[in-house]
Length: 212
Picture (cartoon, rainbow, N blue to C red):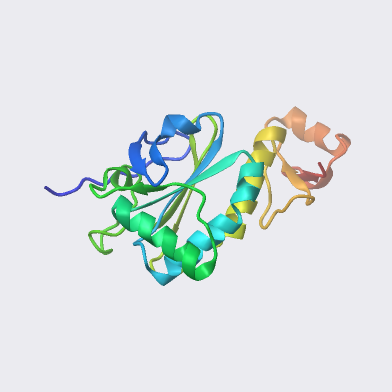
């Protein structure tokens, strides 16, 4: 039977899942109240994926300090995951502390749109999903099979989203903590007239920034 692949949508509930992992059974509900980064990789024991897992692990404590957990996924068996993580520990000196989902039947991968036409039938592309503490899908990032992800960018993006949520602001290109943030533009003629007197750094009526 042909596997039906769906694509989740931003700002809607993330697809629910319950699956075996290297840390026992995990479900989306287990992460309620925390941010979750769910990311897929094409296959265990592949060089680019190995560098990504090492990168995620090196940033794991940073993510946890931001109330965010990590969970990986590939269409490999639990035993393959366990063997690979042991290999990473033995050969690279990195102990993977987050769970990896066994998804042999591609149920989670299909629900999240991780298997794309043109890719190998048994491989999930490099997809990364940010799910907020309320279970809402907030960001999706896809990379090609040939190129590894930037974990630093994921740290930056998570901090930017958390900053926007906490302060009702937007963040400009390349924003990092300490940079100015963008104030929502006025929505009425009266608000436009008031904007110059509101104490923001205003370049034009629709473009104002401030420091936090």
